[in-house]
Image (tube, rainbow over all chains, first blue to last red):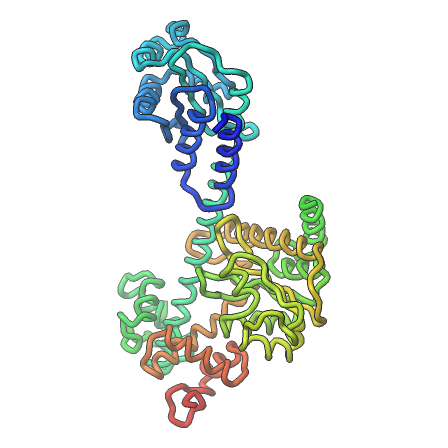
Length: 247
Length: 238
């Protein structure tokens, strides 16, 4: 398949993840693999910053690449770290000419068989999420078209991740809503059972539920749930003290 | 185009005194689409939990029927994940909703449309629009309803975002109808019949359907002890 076609297919593939539930690691592994397939690079990897700001290796096109990326993080130096921190591309860097810049990383990368490195920041507006890291086994420069194509692939992946994060927070809120609503519902169900079993009105039933939970140091919702599903009896809760003595 | 629609919706929401309140969601949905009324049902998974808002008695009935019967445009829109509609309930193009259609029609809804209320893959529920006259939605109305459903999803979650963990936002608690009386009644009926609460809920739904009554009304009768289940003379032993 011509490189142009691979590139277009890759963009479509990455964009496709926007409409479905997807795994971030799968998506970024796809990004790394497609860079190697569509562009003139030997290996590719992606690092993403954790919420605390610490970069993490998320995806690599090969094991050698993964090891190298981990080394980059351990030694806290290298093109990906620079691209992430500066938010600017670090491309067409001959590793042997950069021993002064990355004294620990460059020799390590050369020993792993690479000659040149190309890192692109993954950012949306002013926020940098991480960086895409590519290596070549020779020290040739990447064609400007390839740099632009890599940035396009990285941008689509960035949008997908941002969208994914927004969805995750929507899901968390929706779960909270359902959880809160379910707590309310089991309390109403327990009130109904107590009311019927002990011949009380709803308010008295609720007072009794609360009183029993307090006496036995139980959470109201937990006790209500046990009563609603039948693992705690509704008819034998502690009786309420006479009116004047209620807390 | 979507931007303009969104702007108009937000302007209408802002112009509404009760902006930010859930009731304005259904009001604006009705106004922007030029329909007769609107309601929004929230679900937990595939289980309808209740209505966040409805604009008038007919939309309240449409909401109630769908909650009680477990079928209708909002149930399908929520379950299937895409808009569904019936331009004329009196001469439906697709035979569906056999329990919902007759009472919805006689209650005053002639055309009904359901739109999923969701953010990405997070499904909150569905928006139901109804009209007292038959007819399809125009492309414009359809597009407005889609944007409106999106605004509704974000508004509902924004409301809940302000609530302390484990509690329902005060706005939802006060304005929405989560059929709490039905759950009280289900607790009582479960004791009366010695069945699970889930089974009791089904009995209440079946009874509401069989007698053509609102499930809230029926539940109120149980809670106020005007109706008992399990009594041999009671009408649930049909």
